[in-house]
Every structure is written in structure tokens, then in C-alpha cells.
Amino acid sequence: MESAQAYRIVPPNRIVPPNKPTGEIMPGRQTRPVAGPAARVLVSLAAYALFAVGPQCGRGLAGDEAAGDLAGPLEVLRSVGPMGAGNEAAARAWRAVVKANAEDLTEVLAALDGAGPLAANWIRSAVDAIAERQVRAGGDLPKEELEAFIHDTEHSPRGRRMAFEWLTRVDASAPDRLIPGLLNDSSVEFRRDAVARLLAEAEALGGKSDETSKAAAGEVYRKALSGARDVDQVQQIKGELEKLGHKVDLARHFGFLLDWKLIGPFDNTDEKGFDVVYPPEEVLDPAAEYEGKPGSNGSRLVQWVDHSSKNEFGQVDLNQALGKANGVAAYALAEFDSAEQQEVELRLGSLNAVKLWLNGDLLHQHRVYHSGAQMDQYIARGRFEPGRNLILLKVCQNEQAEEWAQAWAFQLRVCDSAGTAILSRDR
Image (cartoon, rainbow, N blue to C red):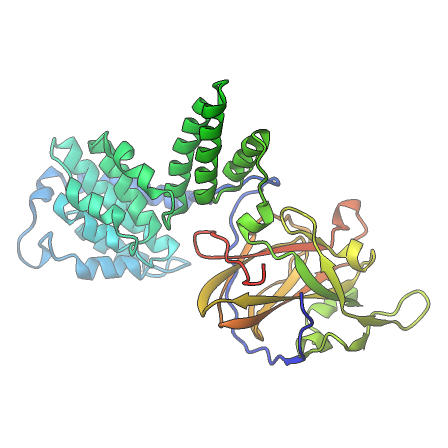
């Protein structure tokens, strides 16, 4: 990484809350969040709808409660918030929405666009109630409209997935017709399905002994890799390609940053350093020296050092790079040369307390130590400007003495909302 010029940082009070997936994930694996008890209760309401509103409601209602008048009730469902906010009104609105005709399914599905997780639970259960009632009554679902909805990437991935699942239930040919064309879709779930099909095809080819089939298998595996975003699939493809003599650069595939400038340690005794504004938070000057945390021999000066991670998942071990220590904080600086102005996700994993800035804006912070680390543990969203962008991390280690609490490390990658790597122009 080229030397950074001095860059003044005035961190504004703008913070993007972390998006932390649920579940403990071992290295090299990923899981998706699962619905909690509240979601399962709401989904069970769909079954209640079959009896509470009755099959006759599928034919529509009279007056102001006509099945086609969905905009108001759907907006009420979309407004549901945390801590039960809006639940009473939502229950009334839900009873109105589930009276809609099957022809209105795509309108209800569209309400999932931008909906919060609790609102989405209400809307999903309404979709299930409408579709289930129609199917049980021997009716058909609007197949063409559902398929068009699936292809419209302007809609949310969860809504499109739900449309796909209902379409598949009434049209068994839908997966074979649709999934192969979704390898590069904005929905990670659709990508996963498309990759799985390619893996099965490649495995069948790879099982043959002739060189032509093996070469063909390699091409299919490379095609699958181009669309794969889930770690387990990527690692599987990497292993198969390496058996065939092909190299796979995981760090590049995922967009992990490998080249950093590091400085530290600064004092984090009693975890107080997390809130202390040390010089790198005010001015980034790679040539500067600062007073660091005193060592056993007294005062100590610290300066920026270059560091390149060799880890295929981009992990930077600060104990190795700066020296084993506890009750300390360090800063990591990376430059990113962006080809254009673009929205990006900075996906971070660390066992330590961390702050993250992009071009001086504080995008994310979490004061958590040794509670588990995983790829994409925290997701911050920001915007790259054309040309040079500066990514600054503050990584704090506490004073726990247990052997399992000695890690002082991080990993960070740059990607789009689907997890597709965004690479610096100089990489």
C-alpha cells in the first residue's frame, strides 16, 4: 500500500448499527438467521386465517373492506416496530389483508420491500394464508405474475423467494426453468440453488476418467465459483478445482483486504481506551510517532508499520504484527482505490471491541470482547468516492487472562449487498 498522506478526520455522530447474524459459526461455514419464537407464532396465524376468515373470503368483500383495497392495511403491517409497537393495529390489518384474492398475492409480496423483520413476519404469514386457502380450495395461483415477480430484482430477496416457493408448489417445472438463470442473482439464496445444480453437474463429469470430461468439469466448477457466495460452497469448489490443478484465491474472491498500515499499542486499561480519541482518530500521518502505552521499561513511542496478511480469509493477527499484549488498542489503516462512486458493505469479523471509519465517517462500533468471531459478523454500509478512500479500524483488546481470551485480530472485506467482492483498482 502506498504511503497515505496526512488526512484530517472529524468523526461525525453517524453510526450504522451492526447487522449481526445469529448462531455460532465455525470457520469456513455460514448459516442464515432463523426465525425466533415470535416469528413462528405469527406464521401459525396463517393456519388460523383458514378458519377465521373462511374460504368464501377469497371471493372478495363488499364496500370499504373489498379485497382489492390493500394499500392501507399493508402500510399498517409495514409500520410494525420493535417492543410490540403497532401490533394491535397490525392484527386488525392482517385480518383484512388475508381476505384478499389470490390475484393480489404479488401486491402483498411487494409489501416486503424494505419491511423490517417484525413487519415482514406479519406480511409473510398473510401471503401464506391467502395462497394456502386458494390451493386448498382447489384453485390456482397467478403463475405468470409470480414468475414475473421472481425475475424483478427491484423486489426484496425474501419476497422473491416466497413467490418462488409458492410457484414451485403449483408448478413443479419452475425450478428447472428458473434456477439455472439465477447464478448471478442479487439474492444469495437463488445463487446458492444455482451453484448447487452446477456442482452436481461438475461432480458427474469429474467422476469420469477421460481428460475431456475432467476439463469440462473444471469449466463447470469455475462457472459455479463465479456465482458462489456462501463459504461452504466456495470451499467445496476450491477443493475440487485444486484436485484438477487449478488455483483459487479465496481472499480475492471474497474481497478481503490484505495490505494494512498498523500502529499501536495504545492504552486500553480497564477497557477505557475504547472511548479515548488517540491521534490516529484526528490526523492520519504515516510518518508520525506517538506516545503509546508504557512498556515494562517505561514510556514507549509507536509508529505506523506495513503489514500484509497471508491468511486466505484476510485475518490480521495483531499479537503477531505488534507484539503480544493485553489492555491495549491498535489502529489499522487501508487505502482503497475505487473506480467510481459506489455503495459498499464493509464486512468485519473480530473477537475484540472495534470502531470502523470510512473517509472520516464512523460507520460502526461495538464494545464486545471474546464473544465469538465469524466471517461477516458485522456489516457496515458506506459509500466509496472515486479514487482514494481511507478505511480506519480501532481494535481493542482487554485484560482477560484466560487462554481463550488472548486473540487480538480482525478481518475485513469489501463487497456489495450480495457479498460479491469489490476490488481496489490497484489489486
